[in-house]
Length: 374
Image (cartoon, rainbow, N blue to C red):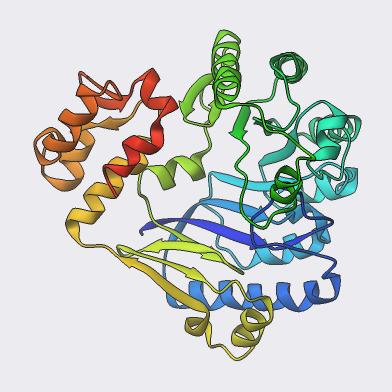
């Protein structure tokens, strides 16, 4: 039976973070029950018509932990998850209690991703987070008490008024908690977000590019010295605790997305659901699931090979030449000789035995590398 990853989108949250550009809604509690009902409907119809072995499940948002835990239980009951090796849910401090976490564990969730972003409360407040560092600590300790071993902690760099000293303090505190996985993202200022307006009005000021890069390399060196493997451009883990769901995506494995704005990759086709909440609910209620879907790309063989390179070069180990040969029957060094020669000459990639991977310079300028395979 063919394997597939599952992504489930919960588009509700208590409050939109100032930097958030995801499809999510605050103060829409009245629509939650109907949304969950139609989300279950969508999941049920897919698996009633398609036979797959589910390998991973990722519940994201929004803030999945904001909704009633019994909704999460009902959703997972629709997914054939007997073979799922990893089931992740995103959690925000201040939206869970002991009973909620306990139910998550009982229904098979075995990985938590907790959004911290910073240990400094002043930084959390200015980016619109709803929690304090102390609430994060409480959530983390509750999760351990419930029995969660595989926990990811999200951190952000490049925040307004953030310093290297802030980063150092955050890392020291988090390392002492010994999470199995740490994700570190640079702030990206998207148009029409609250933080973009605050920056435009000179109410907040971003660190310059050199300082942001110094923050990144400080994080990388510090985490590696403390036993975390840097396995993807923004992700670090203890051995064996890499995110299986995300690795499958970067290895161009198939996945199906359920819910508002969810993306899928099936049969060489990338498609996504509508971002219109009421339209999503209405179409699902009438079993018109196809009306929610928008085709993004139908891949031909060459574009599939290009994408495999792009996704693979997100990983620090890069693209395995042998695995590329096994998958496509061609040598990437020959197929993409023009692009690769250019990137090697510019010092952006390294060809090291079986691997084509980013150099240190390439990590800083990764977008330039990926553009060669678009």
